[in-house]
Image (tube, rainbow, N blue to C red; front, side, top):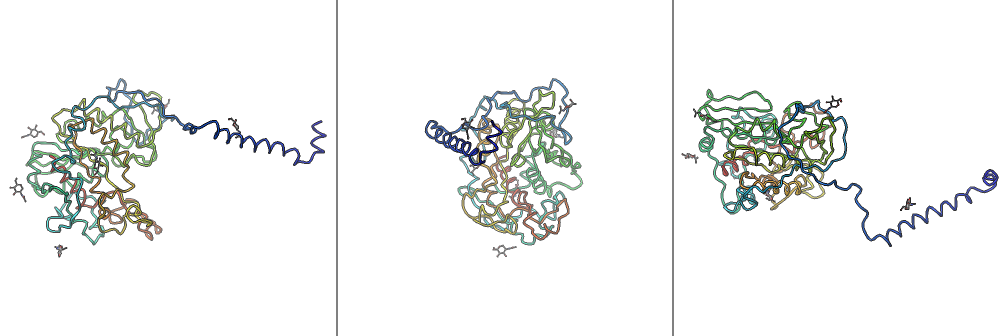
Amino acid sequence: MIQIWSRKTPLALVTLPFLVLIVSSVFYNKSSLRVFNPYKAPPLRRRPKTTYVEPNREPTSDRGVLDRFSRCNSTKEYSGRSTRFGGDGGGGESGRRDSGSEECDVTSGKWVLDNVTYPLYEESECPYMSDQLACHTHGRDDIRYQHWRWQPHRCDLQRWNTSEMWEKLRNKRLMFVGDSLNRGQWISMLCLLQSAAAKDKRSITPNAPLTIFRAEEYNATIEFLWVPLLVESNSDDPVNHRLAERIIRPDSIRTHALKWEQADILVFNTYLWWRETTVKLLWSDDEEGECEELDGMDAMELAMETWAHWVMTRLDPSKRVFFVTMSPTHQLSEDWKPESQGNCYGENEPIKSESHWGSGSELPAMRMVERVLGRLGPRVSAINITQLSEYRKDGHPSIYRKFWEPLSPEQLANPASFSDCIHWCLPGVSDVWNQLLFHLL
Ligand SMILES: *[C@@H]1O[C@H](CO)[C@@H](O)[C@H](O)[C@H]1NC(C)=O
Ligand SMILES: *[C@@H]1O[C@H](CO)[C@@H](O)[C@H](O)[C@H]1NC(C)=O
Ligand SMILES: *[C@@H]1O[C@H](CO)[C@@H](O)[C@H](O)[C@H]1NC(C)=O
Ligand SMILES: *[C@@H]1O[C@H](CO)[C@@H](O)[C@H](O)[C@H]1NC(C)=O
Ligand SMILES: *[C@@H]1O[C@H](CO)[C@@H](O)[C@H](O)[C@H]1NC(C)=O
Ligand SMILES: *[C@@H]1O[C@H](CO)[C@@H](O)[C@H](O)[C@H]1NC(C)=O
């Protein structure tokens, strides 16, 4: 019967009922949703229930250190495990001692040209200068970026004084812990201080995860520990790290903490390495190499909580701890010049518009940092560099630095395409971050 039917019936007649059925069922589905279901469709992925994992437990087995060869054997969705601990730091939000304190809100102010006091040192006189940051040496002729002074609206920043800073550091270890922005601040500190340290009584160790500058006269060290993601990760080697896949141990900061726990003054940062990426989580109790995947900013929160837990429960309370807020980038000129398509390339003036905030600085991340620091109370001071650095679209190396990879003719024809709008020329913006540290110490 089917054979006869299919042979004799025109195709349209067969398909028409089906078409009607499909169309009407779509219509029915749509209208039924509209009429009978006043609620929005549920989200495709519901957030899993949060469970608490106590971070920084002593390892029960030797689970090895993550490095660039580490791989996940498999990856599944985020399980909802969190490292956030319940306690208040004692001081709470009100007890905070930071750069936004009542005495002087240094985050609100403006840049004024001051070619008498700035720069605080000469680029060519700093033996610790990095090729990544020495912009004048690499061809930047307009050096106005070196001459700006940060002027808070309602008070003055303490004037930078090299010998006073050395006195604050006498018999102490100052350690910067973080990523390349933090390393820039460390180099700035060396450049600011080196002129007052006798050449034959100072030394620096080779570049390593921990690099140490020593000044014998003051019995002091100024150190930098490369830890871009705060917690243990596959990116903890300053040179050989894999960018393609970020794997962290969200609940462990131990191997890093062993290096920093003896320092007297600690300056942490982290932010850029979490942006625009997902991160693989390898929890400490994992035996099979099974990772969970999480959005970078959520993973940053896990790392911050693990760090906060360490500061709260393990770190000797006599240590001074600072956290440097996010360093802004200037990768999109439309942030300050609507409808333009460039970036920081060619910029030679700070942004004048009060409280300018670029798209590179994610507000939810700032709120999260505030929350974590708020719970730590006066234990940790924020060095709040974000707003003042937002104005400095002129402060980046752009094309005036050493690039490690050779540039192609296409790149050279379009300088904006390879401009560095992330790091900061020295002398420059990072010197002022150190001035804030000096102000707070
Ligand atoms: C109509 O909705 C039902 C379930 O609600 C679904 O199975 C069916 O595929 C839908 N039809 C169309 C054409 O979308
Ligand atoms: C400093 O700036 C003033 C005013 O902008 C200018 O007249 C003067 O020549 C500058 N001095 C130096 C040493 O660049
Ligand atoms: C720096 O501080 C020292 C000691 O406190 C003081 O003697 C000196 O005058 C200061 N230098 C400047 C330029 O203010
Ligand atoms: C040097 O500093 C360390 C602390 O970093 C201290 O233990 C030691 O006593 C100091 N040495 C001298 C000679 O003051
Ligand atoms: C992945 O699985 C292999 C074989 O079972 C194992 O040797 C390795 O340690 C696992 N990787 C991780 C990160 O646990
Ligand atoms: C830093 O300052 C900005 C405004 O200048 C403010 O919105 C933010 O909350 C401050 N962050 C912290 C951690 O204090």
